[in-house]
Amino acid sequence: MSELNDIMDLLNEGEGKESKMSLKEIVSIVKKYFMAIWNKKWIVVAAGIIGGIIGLIYACNRKTSYTAEYSFTIGGATSTSTGISGLSSLLNLGGGSMDAFSGDNVLELIKSHALVEKTLLSPTIYEGDTITFIEYALICDSVRAKCKGKTEKENNPDAISICDVTFPYGQERETFSRAQDSILKFMSADLLRTNITAFRKDKKLSFMIYTFSHTDERFAKEFAAAHLREASQFYVDTKTSLAKKNIDTFQEKADSVRNKLDQCFTRRAKFADANRNANGQLMSVTQWKIDTDIQILSNTYTEMLKNLEVLKLNLAKETPFIQVIDEPRYPLSNDKMRKMKGIIIGGFLGGFLSCLAIIVLSIIASMKEKMNTEEE
Image 1 (cartoon, rainbow, N blue to C red):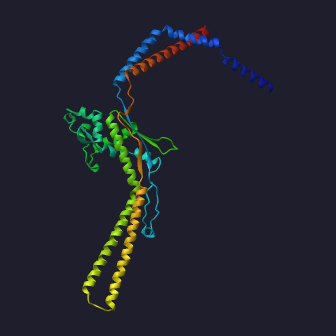
Image 2 (image 1 turned 120 degrees about the horizontal axis):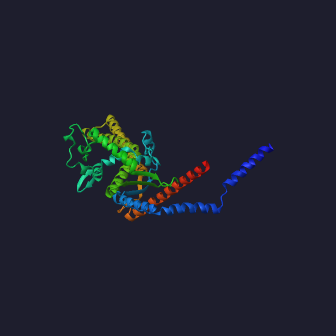
Image 3 (image 1 turned 90 degrees about the vertical axis):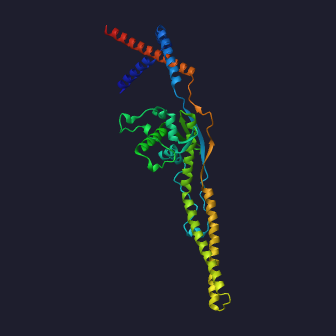
């Protein structure tokens, strides 16, 4: 056992000696590679100049991306049924809301294909004309400009290109052709993948961030506003659909009671006119029955009106809303790269990569020289 310990100590001592390197050796290595770079300094300068030219060309040809950013939070949606009497409970009515979307689900709602497609088909104004956002996007991408003067059907009568497909405002979604559906689906998926982001700023906070980026500044701002508006409307409609349905049902029942009450008033008037001078127990009983019906229906209708107002009040309390905290203003933030910045970044990368290449080649040359020496 002691022999094994001695062997391990020797190995550890050998590794420690190999791993140690003096300051003089480090300086020698640095100086060696510095001289290698200095001897080829004109290559480094040339690479830096070439990199600067490439950076300048990239900065001139690169499209600027504009970003519209919204900061918002979810408000309202406090579920309560306080003040609703037993009458509405017996009718299985209340002011409850649907909790299909809450918390981070709102972010997934914003990033749904259905809402993006609905926004793309919503109207906007372009040069005085009302068009859909998808047509506006095709104009921004120069697709419509490239279509001018081109007819694919001259070469192939059966060919269908994007130049032959339009998205006029007001066309029903159910009447879309296969080509329209395909283009709309592709564009919505592309926007979700590259242009739209939605996230919670901090898990401990209720603030959420929505951003939309595009190369056209006006399109970025208007599409972001329309998209968030569609999401907000869908969210509110979904959360309050049950409460609105209850109110409509209760309103129908109240109207039915009111009609019966009106019929009783009419019946009492007709009975009084027909038996103006009549006397007797039968007449009194009939009159009493009519008056009793009127009293019952009046009390019922009054109670239903009270409950209907409570339901409407609860609906107002339960109606959620997307409260915008910060909204984009012109000019939008962008990632525009200035020419000088492009030259500096390109020149630096060119010089750095050339230095790295020289060092790597020097290391390879040293290793080859060492191997040849060992072989000799």
